[in-house]
Image 1 (cartoon, rainbow, N blue to C red):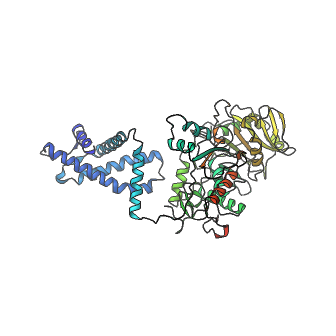
Image 2 (image 1 turned 180 degrees about the vertical axis):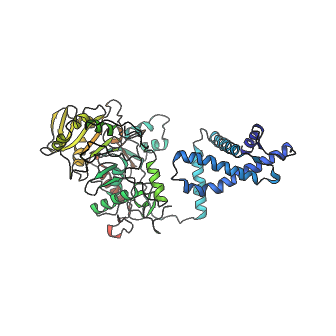
Image 3 (image 1 turned 90 degrees about the horizontal axis):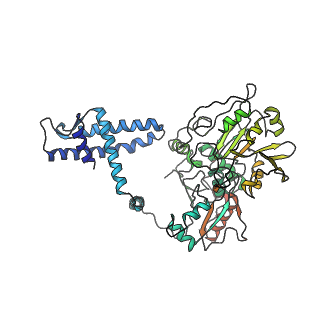
Length: 532
């Protein structure tokens, strides 16, 4: 296909040719095109793998332009390798020809793989076969256990995918009807990956209020997908539980924020910044919540576009892989910057974690009370709770303790007393317990804001630029699932629903024991991050 593309372009473009000055036969020209296409393909195969590592951190727009330039340069080099000077092109034409060849190759590959569900599978089998040929490790004698996490897939959506005569997930559909069982569980208030995965792998997500939050006692912004933050969160969990993690003995962790104590890790954020010989790896428009806070403080709203948070986790993983420093706090995509309230006090910090928003006042030690907030900014709470996109706001009252405020009522969490309409009612019977637990976290923000949830569709409103959203209460994100082999005991023998990722961790521990999985005391785990 590449040879045909070269022949066609040579006929159409006046300053691109594949013949000698005196002309060549069609057969000779076709042979020259084949040589050029082969040389271009060989150079691309040799050069691009060397360049990819250096280009991981290049911004997308610059990378796109750079790809055109490099491909054009490779084509010029390939044409120079053709004997007798038969291949010639102007530099700007070489860029066009290289782009056309790449597009034709991609289109051909896509066409051949259309409606072929086995194409990707065959490629994986070939890659696995090559690895087995290079190094064929001995097959283990003991059984093993695999825990597979599907991020963002709720119980109800999975049920839809396995129903009917032609289910979207036929293997899972077959399992649920024969060898496996399916059950839902309920997340904590912070339903996003960081809080859930830390508890699943390490048994505790205590004092992890969101995906990102500000800690007044240290003056640091903690972001779950930053290598240093992930390492510190894992260290705290290990210190709190006294246990190395779910995967501490002969375990492997792949593509996670936390290691679970595994010795074999790949693409694990908490150990990405401290690899050694034994553990080498094989902001958009925040014009919304921040603007609302500014309006509540009586300030004009600045409408401007910031950096998009899309790809933030990939960029942080790339920086860790290349041992580059992390992006400065406030500069990283997804780190909403400070919002001015007036000229006499330091700025409050407004952060987003899916449909969970956090507002902290760094100049106030400890938790800012509702009474003090009303004295400082009397319109702020009303501005927030009256907005149709906000479900409730958590604030601490000096008199009543943590209180969830809504547009028409309040829920005093320590006593359970509801004044007016309960703002937590639309979020389910377990919402009050989840919010109460987070309210007592030492690093909970001064204001914790949960977006509204559409009762008809379950849709939630994100406080950051995301196609989907998970991070707080509401919708399918609050109801994940467990799918397990039927020979293991049920997650909850008494039939009570599972609530919280820590409870699910205990179930996974029990299943490891039932499957004769190895156990390892904390003092024998040698690969936990030191936090230094």
